[in-house]
Length: 155
Image (cartoon, rainbow, N blue to C red):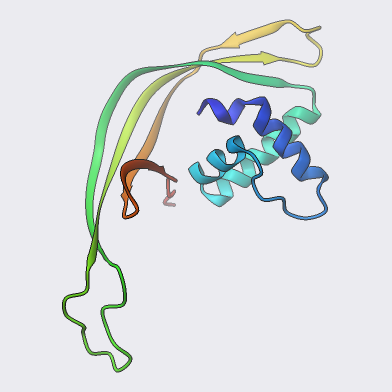
């Protein structure tokens, strides 16, 4: 979350705007934000970052306080490592399976955000909005450790 407000990500967005075509994430901050958001959210956030920087607004995350975390859901899936049917549609028995767990956790957080406005002569304003966020953690077959999965928004 802190990386979304980092100077590194803002600089990446500026490079992407100046590039003749789409610029793949070329720094750790951009890769992390790209992996953590759905495409539509990622594109909208980049537009917001570009607009803010163009307007002279500088934003930096100073601290994140976790006040509460609650388990929202747990999902268990078995995913075949290869096709389970042959070319004629017959079921293939004994196909190895990946087992995956997905945990959705609701966090109650306070974000300490430092903002410098273009007309503030360098004066810094710190806001502390309180938010609820949902993070989904999943296991992957390559690694037993947990990763944060992008949140799939349902309309």
